[in-house]
Length: 101
Image: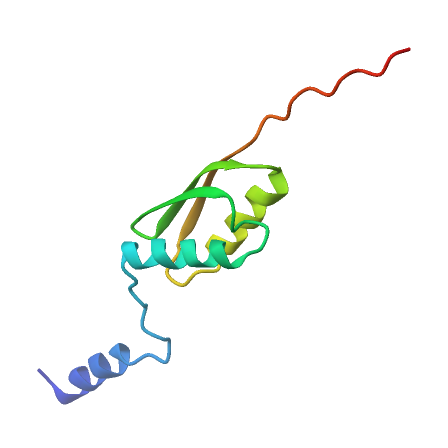
């Protein structure tokens, strides 16, 4: 193989881009749980976390849609998370007693 071709191949392999970081799914799950437990609004919630190929699924019940969005945002910040599926449900609130007329 001519030297020029070899040099071109070597130059093409060099890149300044950082190498992708592989994070184990179990590690991602633990880091997401840790992130959720650090948030004062989410720490007492029963949020289940499952991870497969960097895709995190959050499930369970929270009090408000804002809490569900907050949990999704916290999970998405964890290294290695490629996508977050938010399957959290907002707890049904008991019907308020109607005011008398």
